[in-house]
Every structure is written in structure tokens, then in C-alpha cells.
Amino acid sequence: MSAPRLGTVVRAAIAAATIVSALVLVTSAMADLASLERLARLFEGQPIIVNSKAGEYIVRGKNLVPGQKVRGQVRIKNKGKGVGILYVRPRRPVDIPGPRGGELSQKLVLTIRRIDRNGNAHTVWRGHLATMGRVRLAVLKPGAVRRYRFVVSFQMRPPARGYAVANQYQLSRFRTAFRWQLVPIE
Amino acid sequence: MSRRLLALVGLALLAVTSVAVAGSGAWFHSDSDSYVVVQAAHIRDWLNVYSEDTDPSGDTGYATQVGTSLPAATGQDEGIDVYFQIPASGTYTLRRVVKVRTPSAFPQAGVTNVTVAVAITADEATGKQPIKRYGLDAWGAAPNWTHSVTGWGTEVQRQLNLEMRFPGNSIPPGDYTPHVTLTLTYSGFTTTYYQYEIPIRIRFR
Image 1 (cartoon, rainbow over the protein chains, first blue to last red):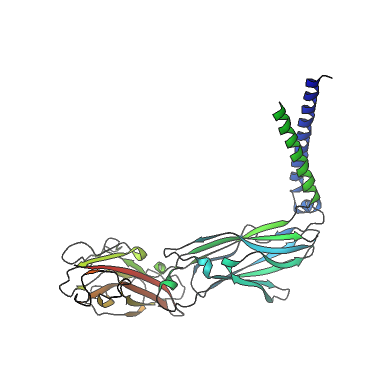
Image 2: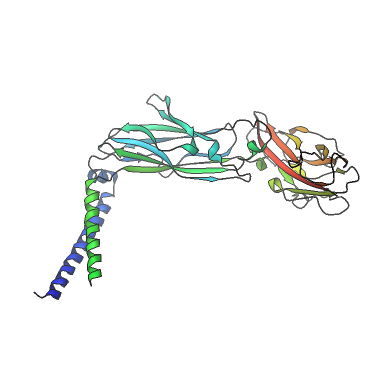
């Protein structure tokens, strides 16, 4: 077989392999993403998160004044076959200051409470939203469910003097996503 | 040709690696996003400040710059701008500097009236206070220098009146910017939060 002909055959073989691989990949992904159960089978032994507020607001508050709180609840389940560590962290926080320029996140305190089976609340994290990083909340076995209550409070001490401190947060807005993550335990 | 060959090899490797990695589960973690959004309240839902050019009722007779027909105030709410040129040779009372009005309904259920207190602060640069007397008085009435209005219901308007000090050694000719602060509270909410801070720019000439 001459060299040019050999090259053509090799190229054709690689092209065919690429197309077949791509087809296998796409078909497999489409089939397996059709349902969480299939996804679970594909990733046997992995934890899978189910979030009751996926893509939705846990907490939504308007016209907040100092001292006021807004709250909401979320239910997190491990639907996979493996044990996972549950983390939550703010993602892409956005401060939109009002006319006086105050950044509301500086005055927002978040309390995360776990609600147990008896309905009792246990604080698992509390702090300023502006300083929040990734928080480890629990270890979830397969099938385990946790309920969490988010309480966002607008905390501002009365100004020691003057008026600027109290005024500057009027009409300020804050928005963030919270990313829930189940990381498998090796 | 060799470039095409390299590209094909690269694609094949990528496909094979993707399938292998996805199948192994080694990269896997499961995640999901939820959201939180909050917005702080604003005084303009409770109280509005108007000048003659923004007055929704079309009322007139607002204060003008002394000796001219130019309006002293323009804009509204936190965008209000007040500027007076005043001869440094007398005492002037400036009536109806701005209109202060409550809306047709208060945003908080159950609140039927509010309290509004008015206060002044000196010019920051000099520490001097060219305003002698001030008050939120009944619309159209003579100045009564009211510093706190209680039981202020909906759709009620009042006017801000100011009296300037006599310019002299204590207030020499020049530019001053004292502030008038309006603070709104209501039953059950006494925090110093709902405020307008109105700069009053004054030129004694």
C-alpha cells in the first residue's frame, strides 16, 4: 500500500471513530438525563441533590426597614446512592445601592436553621451575608432529607449621631444565588 | 493535511476522554441553585417633597430667590435642589420653600397617620448656621415654626418655611449649605430611618 493511500485510510478511520464516539456520548447523555433515576444509575454510588427551591427564591423581601426579618424554607434531599457532604455558598452576589449609595449586604444578617422532625429549629450558621463563604451544613446519607429555614434580617444600630448612617440604605437592593452542593465522600 | 490530521486526532481524544471521565464519576458532585433577594424601603412611599415645577396639584406661590421671580426650589424627593441668593442686608423669611405631602395610602397596613419631625444642621464647611427659624406649617397659613407634626394622615400637604439670620460678623457674606432633615416615624416604628435630607444652598451677597 502506498504512503498517500495509507494516510487517507488512517484519516478516514479517525474520522469514523470521532463520529461514533460523539454519537455514543450524545445518546448516552440524552438517555441518562431523561430522569434522575437514570442519572443515579449512570453515576452509581454518587450522591444526588434534590432541592425543593431549585431555581426559585428561598427568601424574597421588599420594603424592608431596620429590624425587620424575612424568611423562607427549603428542603434538600440526597436522592443518590452515595453519601455526600452538603455545602451551601452564596454565588454571584449583587448589591444595587439606592440613591444614597449604601450597600445593603453590609447590613444583612443571615441565619440558617435546621428544622428537625419535631419542628424545632437549630441554628447551623449565622453571620453577615457580605462575609459568607462556603458553609458545611451536614452529611447526607442516601435518602436523607434536611429542611432549612433562611432568615434574613436587616440589622442596623440606631445612628450615634446625625442622619447619614440611617439614610444611606434606603431603596438599596441585594440579590444572590445560593449554590447547594453535595460532594461525595470517598 | 497534517493540520487536519492533528485536529481529527484531538477531537477523537476529547471524545474518548469525555466518555471515560463521565462514566467514572470521578468529577461528580451534585449541585443546585436557589435565590435570595431583598430591598430596603424608601421614604418616598410615605412622604413626598415637591417644588413648584413638580407639584402634582399645580399649586403656586412657592418661595423665589430674593428680588427675582426665579423659583428657589426645583426637582422632587431626594432630587430636590434649593438655592437662594439673598442680599446680606436684612432678615428674610422664605415661605413655602417646598411642599411636603403624604400619599393617598401608607404602605404599612394599619398605619393611618405618621409623625414628621423637622430639624436643621449647620453648613459643614464653616460650621455656621444661617437658618434662624424653620417649620413645617399648614399649607397657605402664616409661619408657625412647627418642628414636629403628629397625626399626619394621608393626602395632607404642608409647607416648609425658613427664616434667615441677619448677615453680619457671625454670618459673613459667602456661600453656605445647611440641611433641613425630615424624619418620619409611625406608631410601632421609631427607628431613625425614613429621612429626607434637603440641602439648602444659600449665597449671601
